[in-house]
Amino acid sequence: MDFGFNLTRTANASAWRLLPNRWDFVAFPLIICILALTAVGFHETLAPISTLQTQAISLDPSNLPEYALRTTLRMLAAMVASLVFTLIYGTLAAKSRRASIVLVPILDILQSVPVLGYISFTVTFFLALFPGRVFGAELAAIFAIFTSQAWNMTFSFYQSLRTVPRDLDEVSRGFHLTNWQRFWKLEVPFSMPGLIWNMMMSMSGGWFFVVASEAIVVGNRTIVLPGIGAYLATAIGERNLGAIGWVILAMTVVILAYDQLMFRPLVAWADKFRMENTSSGNVPESWLLDLIRRTRLIHQLLVPAGWLIGKLARVPLRLPSLQGVKLPLLASAASVFTSTPARARNASRIGDIVWATIVVALTAFVVWKVTVFVSSGVSWREVGHVFWLGLITLFRVVVLIAIASVIWVPIGVLIGLRPALASKIQPLAQFLAAFPANLLFPVFVVVIVKFNLNPDIWLSPLIVLGTQWYILFNVIAGATSYPNDYREAATNFQIKGWQWWRQAILPGIFPYYVTGAITASGGAWNASIVAEAVSWGNTKIVAHGLGAYIAESTVNGDYPKIILGIAVMSLFVTLFNRLLWRPLFAFAEARLRLD
Image (tube, rainbow, N blue to C red; front, side, top):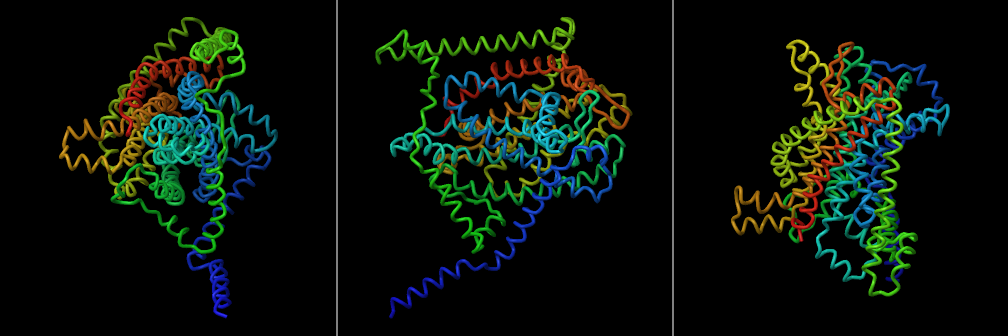
């Protein structure tokens, strides 16, 4: 009888857990609202493309909520694509020695290729995939935003994979975890704090190029998608300061929304992945994450999904090791010269030679094709002029990155070591990072014209306006991940002042700083497209530099000059990274790992 009573009570308790509580009634409307807005935005992308020509962008503020929704959905779609790309590309680059020879330089080049360069060639491709539909233009815009988000996240994930502490890696191997299990149980969790902060930076940095992605002008073809970027471009063209004010307000609301609904919960959730033995003094909090945890029905609905994800991460799937992966062609070539295990090293060397030969041959072929195409519309004198413009932009980038490093490294450490302060600064930092340089065009144009200033000097700050935040966000991520064990040890040994900076914190955050500096310098080159040629109404000011050259060539639809400008910019960025940032990264990886 008593057993039956317990069984009944257990059944009632199980039924009671399925009933919603007061927190469910708060969370359900929020979730339904988000799903409804997403469905409405997706439905509008299926409209005929002719609607883009008949519905001009209106500066009526009542249209801003719809425009903000469209822009936010594009940025979120680009963020999802960037995350998938990051996990795949970053893993291949970090795990495969031969693949890294190709993938890392390609990543350097991709981050230096300006968004306008991608748009010039991709808009026609995506429109052809979905002829007569807005969806093709939407994909072109999403891809353009993707190119402003993915490289930063990939560099962060690559840096994390290369600097996983050796003791944790040895423990995972001691437990006989497969490559699949080690990836999801060690490497991805270890990268989470830095990756999430870089996702914030990528989302905010996407605003910098949202105008270029929504108001696409290539030659005589113009495609304008409804969104905040197109609204801003129209406001600048009409010199409407009131409309620009409404844009700032709308951006503030959107940034606060995705801070509270996405990034703040992610930061609070990722705090459990901190590498330390002692508890964090101030644990990041999120009202939304607390709300979801307090719900009853929603929580029960999410449990199966969490259980399934956990099971997939623990599947003992044995994937081939990328360190030892050999292409069939390389393996067969090596087998000709070796047949015994004792000659494995020679076989590997032969494989490296064959692989390097293939890479060099493909590179030479691409260079030859680019040279043939460019030479059809550009003279050698023009090539020399473009290289000179590249040196001018290089000087701007180096000076501005150095100034930004001196300013933001101490501030980033101050914020990152104080989670309570970081939670307060986070929305402000996101807003400043998202603040498009386009909104400052009126100020710079009016001041430069009124006081007859030199554009080569006074337009330069616009280059670093959006990219300096890569340094700040990565330093914050590094300081946030800095173990409390090390901080307590430094306190116990009374390490203070400059000694603390030199021997404790700077070595700990250095890999993160290098990652931020690499992406900041690449982003600065990209930003030069926008910053070296600015306009306010009919007034246009142009500085000497490679960015202005590419921008003007894109507007004119001069494809040989576009390719020449992009090739020269890619060459400068690749050489700069190889001669400076890569040696620093190798030093951080070898000497400054938190083991």
